Length: 104
Image (cartoon, rainbow, N blue to C red; front, side, top):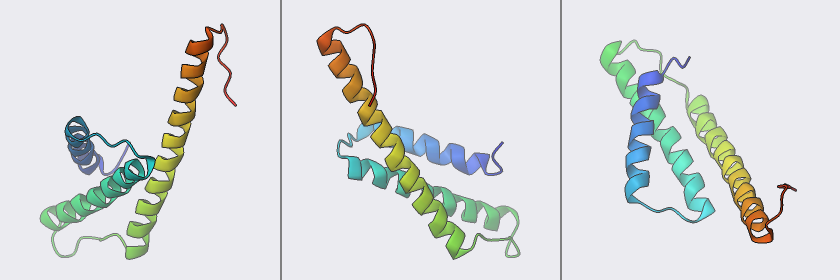
């Protein structure tokens, strides 16, 4: 389970609402969405810690903040790349009418 489930849920809900209203077609823009969601999650977490625990709340370090954003963006890029390859394989399989789906 996530220790930051509320912040994750809040960011996920916000990204889902934005995805319904905004069409992001370019791969770079989609990676940017992953990075922005990570930044937003960290900021929500900091605000919640300040509100609930107070000034003595353990804040994430700048390194962990930047690391989370970079790792999230890289994993998002990998996920988008895999999804793109799967769609390409699926569409070529449909065009050929092949019985087996082969991924390269």
